Length: 350
Image 1 (cartoon, rainbow, N blue to C red):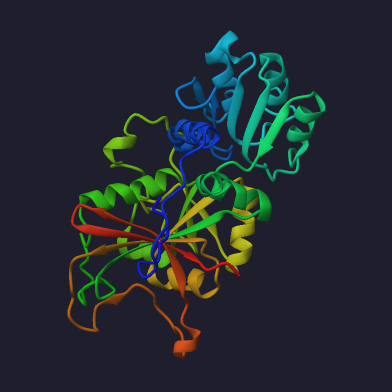
Image 2: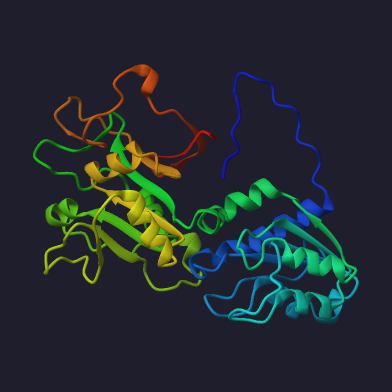
């Protein structure tokens, strides 16, 4: 993910990377391929001894946690070493034994943690247990980067609701379809593959019943970017329709929900949906935006111009009544995908 910069300000040179930062980034690199396989468990990475040492990641939805995988690969080399882990080790029994027990049994002398786990079953207890056993524990190395990697999980554990990603695809003049409703395809294959990666990274994909009736989407994961082809994957995301889908709709089997959007998110959170991808249509997208329920906007912009105001817009319904009411976020990343641009936006901190 690109770092935000102000082009009008001279940027000081970055300080040299410390050994602990290098070790934590090795743990983050190990975690990346687990992103598509572990949810609702967190996609955690660990490294023993720092950069270049044995690494591991959470093993799917039922296997051992990252610390256990990395320590198992290190064997006796873990004794006296530093363990780097992106998320606080657990100290309770769940689907697997407590990671703290494995850490203590390994003989590591020091543990570096990226961020504290907000899950109420953990929430500092793992760190406290390690310190009580005499290990040196440092917390917060590369915290911002780690929390960006784990943002959906952290959000779900803190709020009980899924992290909401709104995906939009449009021409540069903000249109999604021509007046005759034709729209296939606005963006190129690289952008579409990236959108399928968004689906694969999400626990649920949500659309309105109007989109189901108009487009009959399947909402399955098909064409993924080449760089994730070998990553482990769980089954495809839960398909959610706001309203009622026709009995013959390709989206079935699906979950049909009604009511205010906050309640919809509460229900999805109870169902262990850590991230939901909102794909449309324009009325649903506008509703999530208008109610300030979007945590991340991913906008694919095609180098195309419809050239008028009669094409279908990204949002439908009333917008900002004056310039003072315009929503202003922050650009998190910009990436070129083939001939298109991928722009990632986040709300400004409140």
